[in-house]
Amino acid sequence: MDFVDVANIYQRYLSAEIDHTIAPDDGMYASGPDWYFTVGESGLTCILGALVASKLGSVGALLDLPSGHGRVARHLRAAFPDARLAACDLDESGVEFCARHWNCEPIFSKPDLSSVELGGPYDVIWVGSLFTHVDEPLTRAWLAHLVNALGDDGVLVCTLHGRWSLVVQESYMRLIDDSSWQSVVSGYRQTGYGFATYPNSDSYGISLSDPAWVVDAVGALEGVRLLGYVERGWADNHDVLVIGKTDRAKPWPNALNA
Image (cartoon, rainbow, N blue to C red; front, side, top):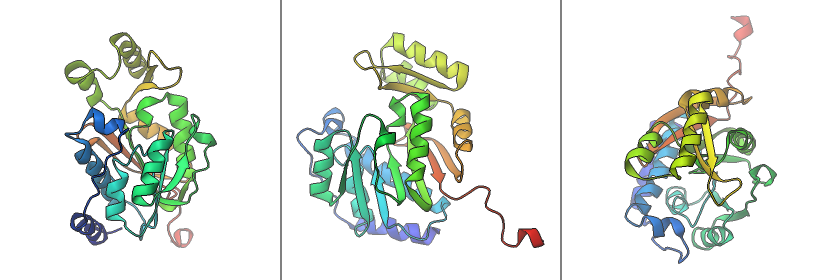
């Protein structure tokens, strides 16, 4: 999409009235009411930046995963009022809330995302703070599964804990207990991807990934292009990765005759 197309989407968003309805059990709002709406809007701006880099001509279908109770979905609906918008999460209450308030197609997730029928193809898939909580094998598998749910030239926009998260843990807030964090950093230093589970979980925890590891992981995916990587791109915190389902090996027109 060109800058004018994206500017028109953003102008439509700015002219819309954002629904500020909050679900009583919205844990994201409870943990940060002062920045809840700013973080949601930042998700939209990440997507708009991705669209500029994409080969898409228009956006007709989007997926928000994990949707929670609509921290980002409410902004997506304002920006894309006529698009098909799906909300997917393990939290069924959150999915149902998004379905009621923003006309989202409900998709109830499972612990293994690879087993979930996502109902694509989508032009845009937004994944805010999922890969930040799973290990390397799941990250690789789930990236591939999400790419498969994109339509031609669609974009996957997802967030990760990057180098800034080292500073966050040490100077601002603990993402996980100190002992587990040392395990995360050890793996990160050795391979580029570190992970440790939360003390009360056997699967979810905190991950930390180096940009070089991310580039290599995207390079292992067939039929895509790495469209962007922005450190601290989401809400000045998480890194943002953009993958386009546009084959990096697609030949130039008439290349064989040149």
